[in-house]
Image 1 (tube, one colour):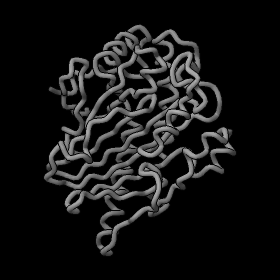
Image 2: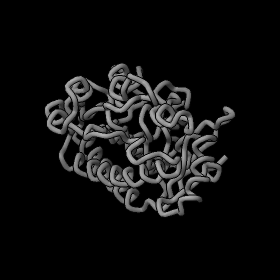
Image 3: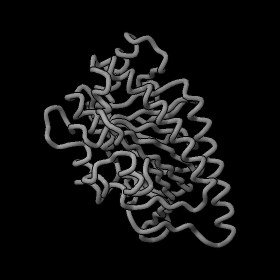
Length: 294
């Protein structure tokens, strides 16, 4: 199975065509391939180059960069299996570095615990290239939100919610080549809690598996200048089931080191988790804070 089975769109596609492809992708895979994403791919390549340079210098110095204790998707963290044989590095850059920044931007006090683990970085040049990638991805996400709401006949802001407290998270994961089974818990299949997540993958062509609605799995092979969009459970809830939350699995690299860079986008934290519900998006994240953000 190949990437040709995942419906593909571009952001300048006519509304009626975009909507038709969206319906197929959202129902069958909970995913779309976004074409003509050269700008985002360029920034992803910058992240990959900066990471390679950082690790070359780090390993030459006989040390590794250990992040602070705290949230596994905030700041800089290191992951090893019990035997030390599998290692991959995760860099997480959230919208706000700490609760003080979040409060200044208008986030309600009840949601400030989501930002309690301060972002920490092994070097500002590395943070800078990831931040530039994130900024471009968030800008594209705004355009994408407009296309999605029009395609589904929703009023403006129906998906993102009102208010300044939407959140997003950039994750960059550096996977060294390793002989590891896809069944390793580090590569377990998952569904994101985001509205959607944008993936760029540099490295091996067979990088992700995506589950279809019938339970079969396909291997995703990205095309040049393409980005994978996967819908999360927030999208499934807020569209009343028009979207199926994508279940996917990142595959361990077999032949070469791979860099996976993603941006997860969430609506306003104060927005209802689903139509008519008292529980908000922020409430759902607070409940799950012990595992991941978002």
